Amino acid sequence: MSEFLILKKRRDFLRAAKDLTVIFHNVMLQAARPLSCTDNRPARIGFTATKRLGKANVRNRTKRRLRAVAREIYDKYALNNVDYVLVGRYDTAYCPFENLRTDVIRAFKKINKEIRQEESDEKIIDTAD
Image 1: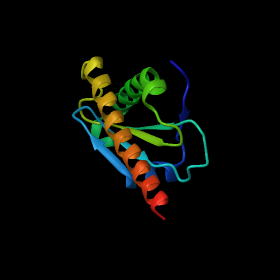
Image 2: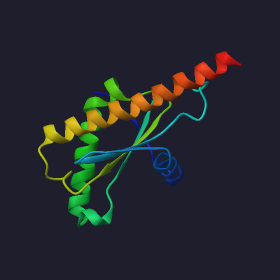
Image 3: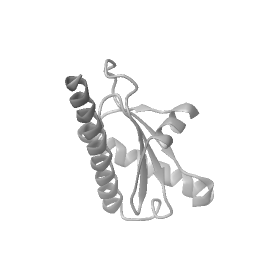
Image 4: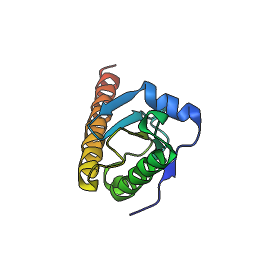
């Protein structure tokens, strides 16, 4: 269980929203690919809960639960140089924690697979030149 860097600027959230998105029943995960391959910074994670979810207590509970899951899985699943945004959905605040954890892990695996695949495609193109 380690500390992670948190996204705070709106432009970082918007960049992640434009890039990759994976939706599961309890959570939505957005990710922004690295801008350059030369940087080697740890992954950053942001948390969002919209007003559609309910009042402030529901939104706060949603973000607290997302932060708790992120703390547990960060070391194993987060890739360097990638910005992730966990977005709460209607069931995030009240679903069993193990279900939420499972959905977040599946989302990270799926996003990371897409990022790695694109990186390998870029390497193939570079070697072909």
